[in-house]
Image (cartoon, rainbow, N blue to C red; front, side, top):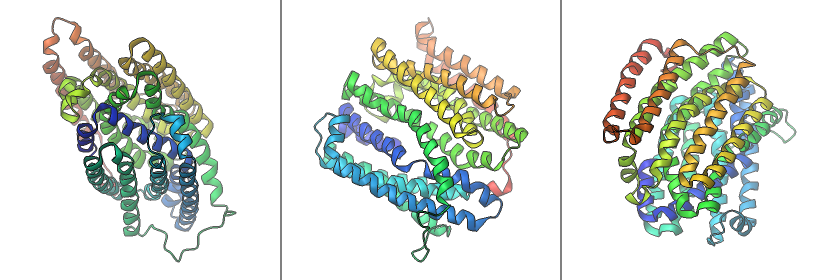
Amino acid sequence: MGALSAKVWAYFLGPSGYGILGLEQSLLRIATLFAASGIGTALVRTSAQLVASGEVDAAADRQRAATTLACLLAIFAALIFILFRTGIDRMLFDLQVPRWEMAVIGMALACTVIYDVQLGTLNAHHQVKALAAVSMTGAVLGATLGIALIARWREAGIPFAVLALALANCLAAQWWLQQKSLGISAQTRLPSLRSSAFSPLLRFGAPYAASMLAGTGVQLALPFLVLRMLGPENVGFYRAAALITVTYVGFLLTAMAQDYYPRMVAAGGNRPELARLINEQHRITLLLALPIILGMLALVPHIIPILFTPAFMPAATLLEWQLIGDVFKLSSWTMSFAILAQCGSSVFFWTELSGGVALLLASWVGMKLWGLAGIGIAYLVAYIVYYLIVRYALGREVPLRWSKTNRWVLGWALVAVAVVRILPVTPWAQWRTPIALAIACLFLVPALRIVHQGFRLEPTSA
């Protein structure tokens, strides 16, 4: 649905309008990091073990506290956007968009903050099927409304399309909470602001939000740096490339957040079990991703016009570099989730800050030297640095050694993407696509075999 929406939006908006859409989506996500204050993730962190140990009442108290905080933060954040809409527009966009647009984004922000806690509640109870249904329902409903709005009003419909997706997600999550009897009824008494249930949420949530602002926040802020250095049209190219990687990486990230992360929390201080879980997740993540990465590298010149329009072809080189960087990104995420679940909040903060600074500096230098392609080169460099940082940080807490299979997969993955990337400057340039597809198939066959033989789902997780 995201790809379908992107195709329609690219057709009706063009690179420049699509860039504005990307800027408003980035603004919403950055503001969500501030406003949500990590409450949803803190709810998972503090409630997963309570649910696993059967302490249902304590988990329910934690949920009520998180819901109260989310409602208060949502109202406050929406008011900030409504009251200071002109200043926000001038500071970030400087594109003379109508004043009311920031007010609409503020309403989308309120929905997103509440949605974050709704997902946290389902995740804490390990309701994986419901989480998948929420994502699917919200995506279908939000995309349908967004496509209709953009098709009817073009650029004037952008903020309403952003709001439609946020509202659709919120309504879908609430419906599933009620279906699973996890919602808070009107008769339930919410805790007072002095309740001890708030303390664990804030102690973990605030540092987590700061960590995400230092890491993910930098990535979300990059479109604004591109706007200042290269202009709105290049923001559209950047967002097009980023959307393609986010679409398949988002699938794997969702799996990590909704299944892997709660299991890491539940493992407690059992270090051998933690090392086993990390190796298992790393193997499965790379085996699922590598055929996709190699296949997309082979078909980049064809993917861009199909998913967007031929006007977006300048994004092709950027996308190629990002796909190579995703090998390090996915490997790093496997470890960063373990740091989040098991290490102190300060460790997670410093790893995210280091990665964010590396990405920001590399992107600035890359755009100065190579323009739009420099963002992709910076992406690869930054995630190599981030991989080394999280590997060192996690190694201090967990005696982690990559298994033989993991070393083999990661090593050959780097060789494969390097070969595909340099083929255009060799005498075999015209054979790049069939060679890259052949390499992708070579990875796909053993990947399916290893997944089939080495990974077993527990009956309760099926």
